[in-house]
Length: 93
Image 1 (cartoon, rainbow, N blue to C red):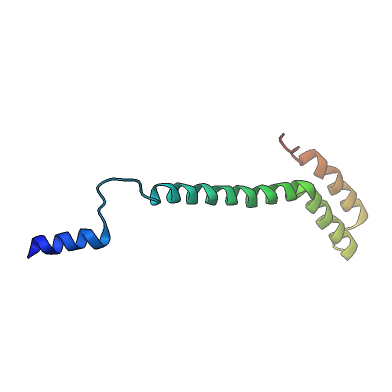
Image 2: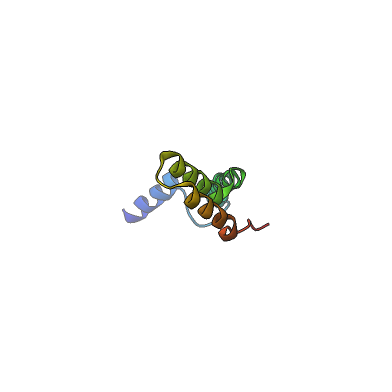
């Protein structure tokens, strides 16, 4: 009886013994595609940050907004504006 059940199981479900399986290609292709998608998404974000001027530009905008709102006076605005380019790091190429 057990022999009949084991034979029937391999007949209906196949064997894992040998031969080429589709999963041998599908699983690595899935991971390669996932890595490519992540590289594209994060690469675009990095390029967008460079295109918009990076962190130093947003700091200048924040400083200008504070000056426009009256939070700081002109002397303090000009003093802080001079410090920003000195502390900014040039983008690596």
